[in-house]
Image 1 (cartoon, one colour):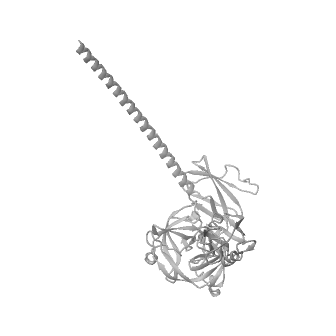
Image 2: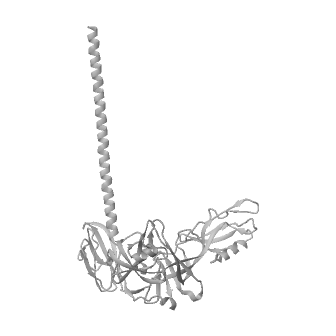
Image 3: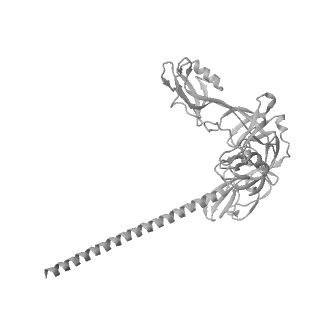
Length: 450
């Protein structure tokens, strides 16, 4: 009896353990199922969010914030986005004289419009016809013609003040290492005055520091658009000269391409601004000049290694082509002299607005091997509202001759005008490092609005 009782107890105990194991396995499966469901829901939510963000970006990138249209001309454009828009006129009081809802368009279809002279409009875009999405300023502009140039130019610009490249250390007379400007001056600062005395050249700046004889000086500088005064005490270096441990620059030189000359003798070039090579900031310039230059060498571009055109510049009055009056992120601009006007040997062409550009064949006008000529390219993408103003046009060099000479787009070709369907539509600005046959360009209307 005792053996049977023990046997029954063992069976019950085993059965209990089996039940516990089953419960534990059930709980584990339930927990795994919950985790799986949660992960699936999270992945689905993440995918929907990502798709929505991509769709939003693509639609936003397809609708320009500013749309230029020619005055008193019938024009068509096609955005191809799932949106509707209402066009209203804008008066000085901010009120529209077009009745609400009377002028609505479907942006998924081609749109044809004609604008009056000296009028301003705004396009209120609604995604899928009901979700407020974006406001587009419609600017009425006068049609104009430009002479495409494509000739190489030497560039010299004088900074507006002395540009701080960086700070450094030096050894004093006592053998101790000093860096008086550390944590006081920053890369990109423009020093305008030393103790109230204007400085525009680094030689004068260095002389003012040396003549301080170790007395604390007040530097008036501009940083990020703000003017401020800072105090620095010069220290004698091992040679007995007073220094503050700062690297400065007062000018920049380079080679680029002239894009156009307008009917008033003004020029535009580069398609991007002149940035300091060390600080990468847009240089604030006091003035500058264009010089005639000859291309003496071309380093062919390869994938991962962009090429370069080397020009010989003789900085003499006889070689000056004009004065640079503006350096902006859209290019350099100024006034031509008679010598520069002779570079414009091509016939004037009308401008092409960004909504008129299409994917497909185009040409660039540039100078390689001492000859200015047209070369074939293909427009592969148009970014109507791209964040970077210099990358609205994406292009690929297809011309066998240019590919043989340069490998595609090389440094020095910035500013080469882009022509499509008999219109000047933009200028080359950048090359893709990983593919020297491809690059970017700026819309010509963007350059003109500098």
